[in-house]
Image (cartoon, rainbow, N blue to C red; front, side, top):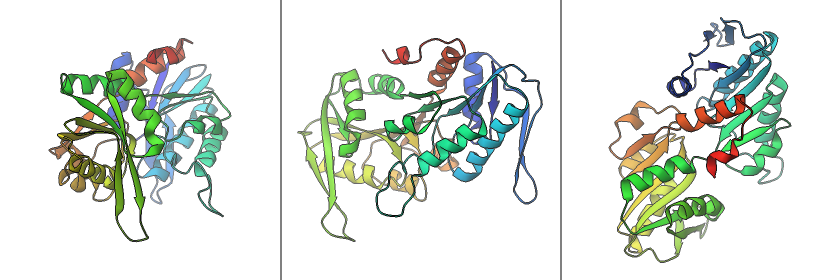
Length: 310
């Protein structure tokens, strides 16, 4: 079993390696002067079971190219099996055609990873579960729910909790968390009255006197979360926190969260935290390294991965 890390999230790769008590395979992933990606695997991987750890986060295209070229290098070095470990799968939000003449980029990226030579994919909290079907190779979609649930229980034990989905599409994800912590479920119904006007928030469920936990898979601009938090407080919630798997947090998202009504935003380290995230007073990061490390170990040993969530 060999571990190869790209440049997208070196800290997570090292944490996974520490969990598995294995060193990262020596490799070089660098740029030529014109920014072409160059990869050199500096150890023998012939006949090995190799796991490539690389989130396709910002800059998504650079990190995606790194992943593809690493896989190609390993394939040409006669690795027995290559598993692409994608803690965050970029382009996942482009999983359908929302209007005419638009791409399904998630399918294109799946094809690229497969064509590059990956034999398996291991990822975390896909934006839409059906993306697993975009790959023509075995794909395991892990869930961060056990990690998030454990943190909620450690920090909110004894409080009157209400788990809230920030939109109708995230109900299944929120219900899974609510079931684990034996809490009720509420839903934020959002819509625009007309173009250019801010969203109107309606809360489905009685949140009065409850500590609310917003649950989502991706936080990007954080506008929806911040608006939902204010709407919940307006409906009588005592406090609002958010638990999100992938902290994209682009543009002014960190400042928006800091100035919002959110008590705290908890994200995982599936995406490398920026300096702004690290110094923020109300953003906290929990690690999914043990979860991914255990899934990798079970994959290498041909054991069940789904039993992790039983």
